[in-house]
Image (cartoon, helix red, strand yellow):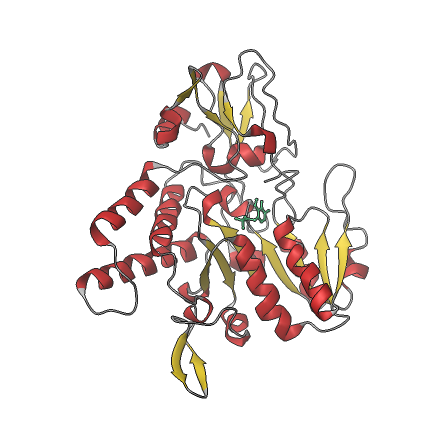
Length: 374
Ligand SMILES: Cc1ncc(COP(=O)(O)O)c(C=O)c1O
């Protein structure tokens, strides 16, 4: 299915810039994506005409702000097919979402010798929190290695998962572009009595995500990688898991009652949203989700609950190569018409992760040096 690149390009005001006399090309979207007018306008409108606190105050502005904030939560819930809006916990980013799981669920459920299984293709955000629990609680980390072609080597998965309490893995590698068999891995985890944490940082922006069919227990992702603002991320988990987990950070907003001798937690999701939340950012994320929902090419068949929407391929004459991960990330692989960018629906996402701007005709880029290892 063809994508109208010129039309999409117009949605992103930054792409009107020229640098060194050349049209701007942004290739760092796996790191963080640019923002469309829809997101910028929603946030500006709120800041200019509707800014107010949420949940606490009974006046018109606050009621409107609460409605917008909770509307954004509903949009995010629908975007990943979450059964309940209150299963969507707003965090600062995916990193904080994973740390929330490590500290709240981990400290309540992991003790000395308990096993967490990770893979060699994890982002630091899904490694360091578990290393910290090795140091603090004496848990054990086991690692799923990679094959020579950048896939997960699952030949020993049953033995790695034996006795494990959690299998935490990425749905799409930020380094390799590899798409992992999420539903299969979640099922494997459950077969061994472990919970499954999916790092959806790269996959949620790229592919329709259906938490129900994936079979995950936890899903973490970041707004800034999916056309939304930075400063807000999402943790989704099953209601029953969130209900059983202790709060992560204490303070206002996460309590229903505070006494001299203790406190009572607020209901979900506020129990995990201590302090004043990122109100404007949530509204921006809601606008980003609505923007993405309006994109073309959403009808590809589903694989394991994750459906690659688009796969950008350059014609052989194209001068700028990027990973499918980067390119697909919010349609931001912008090249001049001469580069003949084409978009097709496919499940076959290239695992290539190289950026070459060596051609004389390659236009300027922003920060390609970080490649996909954002
Ligand atoms: C796969 C993956 N997981 C986690 C993260 C961390 O995201 P954030 O920095 O938004 O918390 C990233 C960021 O690049 C990522 O690519």
